[in-house]
Length: 564
Image 1 (tube, rainbow, N blue to C red):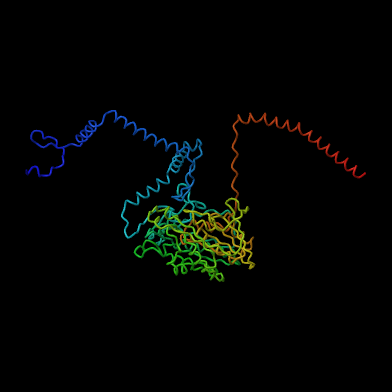
Image 2: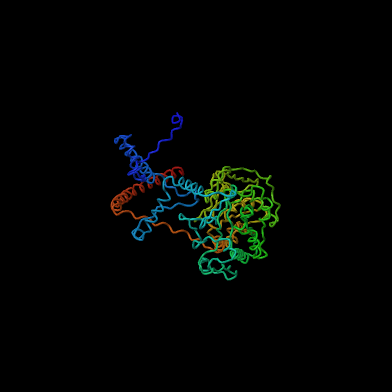
């Protein structure tokens, strides 16, 4: 009875002991017994069918990816990584034997692999799951250019510099010590004629390491907001100020303004992580102290600091919002002598579900929980605008200052419809005030406010403008000039060189592409056709002349009859 009431234990296989001693189970014995049990339960025919099905499924998936890689349209831009994808390299014997062609082909297929965007996003989710998020904080250490905003990149992720690619990452400690600075050898050669009057701004020297000074300390993600950590060099701030001073020396009759714009990290990095980023306020003050006193200083920092509880910066993008740009506009009006308009004077419109560049760089899933929105303002002031495209600085195209068609992840392009070398705006305000705005993308949200106060506004993107700015200002009678750059751009050698090169750069039209030679067989086939056409033309020509003579004689005869 006791044995019956006792609960039966689950069956466990125990190999018999040999010679009275317990036998140690080997893994291969267990594996063999496992397959033996399967063969006993399943027929060999059924197992063969399962094997063939597995092979067929694998080959089908492989074939689908192979055919997709050949026939599906190849993307040219990655929305996830925010960069141009590699293009199919041109074949030549030289590139083949040097290995350049095969390397380019490998990069091309890696960039255009079917479903690549999905795999990149999925990989980011897996990487994010590897650690524990403490205090809702995640720090992303991206090497290279990712934290230096508004520097165009190539398919390989390198920067497109005016002369040479640059800007390696430095830490906050290295930046504050001034150990790194751009070398004088890195300065691009000027294509402009020498100008003896103004003094040339000198680039800070490096320490012989050859590493460029820049500001890439990583990205901090905190409670659904991503922020770049600042690490600029004081020497670069001085260099930026010296370039602006050179403009003042060449354009003494033009009123110059300088507005350095802080980014979100200045106001929203938690106190316990402040040692990871430098003070942008200290850098802005240092730049302003180096400027010529005649250059007016626009204090955007104070205006923005007064409104940090408002929606002045995006959470998933490195830009400021339209409202943040509005507060900077009020600071500019104080220096320019205008009464700023109120937000209530504008018509406010909104684009929703905006996921910006910071998500593209971090792939942090917390940024998706609360997407941004983009508010932009339409003014009552009428205007006409024209834009000029790259390599076509003399061919205007009608333009609208707002791209209301913009969608995520490019919703910020609602301002000015994106970045163009030059946008020229005429308002009809008869006050004779004309201003040029030299900016990177932060200036896109700021520049439109100026059409409410100026007769003409010239919006120049310092990265893409191809004419000499000094001559352009003189030719168009521009009497005011404002530089609008975020703190990162004001301390990045790429942007400083762009602004410096603007002064006297000369536009050189791109060389026309050489015509492709036709095969010899086509030439021999087309030659008789061409001769036949010329012969036909020569045969038709006398008939045309005779017909023309007949018409002239008829007209002359009719005229004589009328006269009679």
